[in-house]
Length: 190
Image (tube, rainbow, N blue to C red; front, side):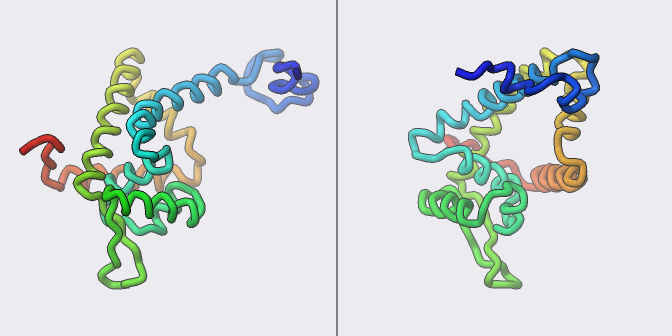
């Protein structure tokens, strides 16, 4: 078996990319690993709900964004997810067939496909957001009084610089739209 250190840190220090850390310091491997584990647990809660119905993380992401942006175009979803049209087509077909998402023709261009969550899709998206929001709230509480803003800045800085403004606008637009929509009933309400 290969030595793990030689896989992570090949060659002498002079050949390694600069990390901005003290000479001889390891790259930010601890943060890389923390991000892997945080992501694993962050998506793990929805994974447990999706597995019994045969859905995975791509389904989760589609349900999330369609619920946050009702009426979004398929092309916009492709841009957000950065997956192939074929992959998205398969996932969308399954979500439509199972009654989580509705695909409608655009009003001005009938070739355009607009995506809307069904009540079933909205309930599932809300369940995921609830689980993940609780996990985030617990982590932010442990981060101290300035944790929320520091984490927000950190996450935004992790996004490619050329995409940051567009991501912020997308989130702000969804937040404004959500505030203007009437609150939906919980799925078990009569």
